[in-house]
Image 1: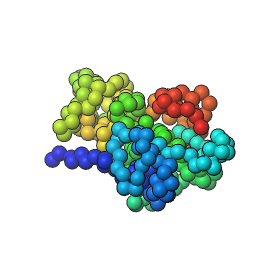
Image 2: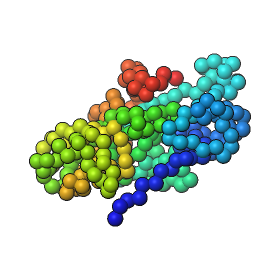
Image 3: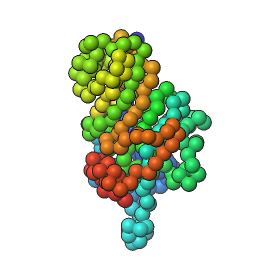
Image 4: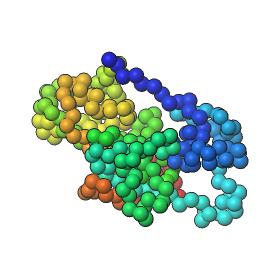
Amino acid sequence: MKEEMVSEYPMRINKYLARQGIATRRDADELITRERVLINGRIAGLGDKVLETDSVEVRPSKRSTKEGVQGLKKNYYFAYNKPRGITTPQRGSDTEDDESDMQNLPEEVASLGLFPVGRLDKGSHGLMILTNDGRITDRLLNPEKAHEKEYVVKTKLPLRDSFRKHMEEGVDIEGYLTKPAKVELRGDTSFAITLTEGKKHQIRRMVVAMHNEVLDLKRSRILNIKLGTLKAGELRPIEGKELETFLQSLALAAG
């Protein structure tokens, strides 16, 4: 039975801003009423909807403009190792799982208003980026941007001789042909794969299509940000040259 793929777009602008971690839906409506939200350069109205390809901008308040850069929100960026068995909450969703990874952050970090960029399913683990910078989400997750994310995978059965070739060229997962990928074999039952897209449970579905099963899935890299030696549940700040390179990859400036 084919899995039904339903797009959330067009999406109401207040829901979109909430998903980006910029404001709650109620606060987003206030921003819209104050004519501080732009969609493709025009002032947004209550109830407007956006597409994935639309450009959404939130203008600073007059007070912030007068105060200058120091009056604007400070952005924070962290690399986080999500443990296996923990869910990833969606910012601005109507319901949140009590067993989310955001419940266990250190107090000094939890107060920064961070949210996870993207998701890892409950059975997967590894690198996530936590931030309060709402500009990041669409720029990083939009498949049209083709940003690299690397995963290390262990399988139940030995990999077939044709495994690497098919995984790199594209696999038919229930009617969708995946984009070309980079694959490095690391043993009879282990490989690393670099994707530039992120369909739901994509790697698990690709492996199933190759008549195998995933036993362990870990994300090890997002663009230039590497998981490194971070232990499960630990996080570290992304700063300096590492942050500069990351933001440049997203066509953003720090701040």
